[in-house]
Length: 377
Image (cartoon, rainbow, N blue to C red; front, side, top):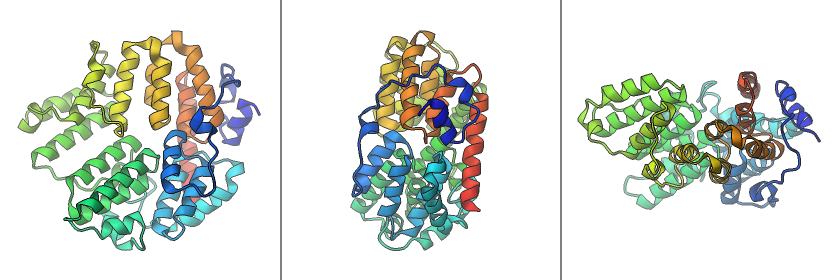
C-alpha cells in the first residue's frame, strides 16, 4: 500500500500531490506495533488511545466495555465521529457510532456533545454504574469517590475522549460546585475547542479572575493573536489576584506568549514550566521551548511528546521551523501517517512541512464536520 492509497482510504484528496518526501521504510513504535487482545480492559485501551489517537480497532473495543451504559457510549461515539477519520474499511464502526450517539443528540449542538445549558439534563439522564451515574451520586464528603472520578476523567481527556471527560466534570460542577472540576472543563475545552461546554463561570473571586485571564490568553494564542494576549494580560493584571500571581496556568501561558512573540528565550526557561506529566498544555509548551533552545534535538523532543500525549500540531509546527531537521522529522511524519492514518493530527503534522498546508487543513476540518453531521443525521 502506498501513501496515496492510505490518503484515499481516509478520503483525503488534497494530500496526494504532497507525499513525495515521505518514507515508507520506517518502523512503527512499540505502542503502534502492540497487538491488543479482545479482552483488554478500559485502562489498557485508554493508554493506547492516548498514543495512537482514536484508533478504530481500539474505539470499537471501548464501546464494548460500555455496553450497558448508553450515555457513556453516546459520548464516546461523539468523539469518534468528531475526532477520527473513518474510511470505507471502518463502515461497521461508523454504523455502531451512529447507532450509539442517540442519547446525546438533545444534549448537544454541532459543536459540543453536552451544551452548558443541558448539564442538569445530563446529570439526570445518567443511569447504571458508569462514570456519569457514579459522579452524579457522589456526596461532598466522599473524598475517595471524588478523587477516583477526577482520575478517570483525566485519563479520558488524555485518551482524546474530551466529551466523556467533560461530562464527568460537568456533573461534578453541577452537583458539588467543585472549582477544580470547572478548571478541568476549561482546560479540556481549550485543548479541544469545546467552548460551549463550559458552564457560566463565576467572575468575582480571585480564582475566577485567574481562570478568566488564562482562558482569554490561551484563546488569543490559539489564534496566534499575540497582541490580544498581551492586552488581556495587561488589563487583568490590574486585579491583585493576577498581578501577584505565580499561578502555574499563567506561568505556562506567559511562556507560550513569549515564544510566539519571538521574545528572547533564556536557557533554562523550560525548567520554569511545571513538571506535571498529565498536563498536556504545560508539557507541550515545555517541549516547544526545548525545541527552540536545542533544535538539534527536535526529533527526540517530538518523539517523546508523541509517546506521552500523541500527535499535536503545535509541537510539530515548532519543530518545523528548523530546516536542518526536516529529513529526520519527515521520517517521523511518515511513521505517523502510515500507522495512525485515522488521526487528523498525523495529517496536520504533514501539513506543517508543505509550502501551503491550508488546503489540507481545510479538508480535514470539512471531513470531521461532515462525518459528525452524518452521524447525527
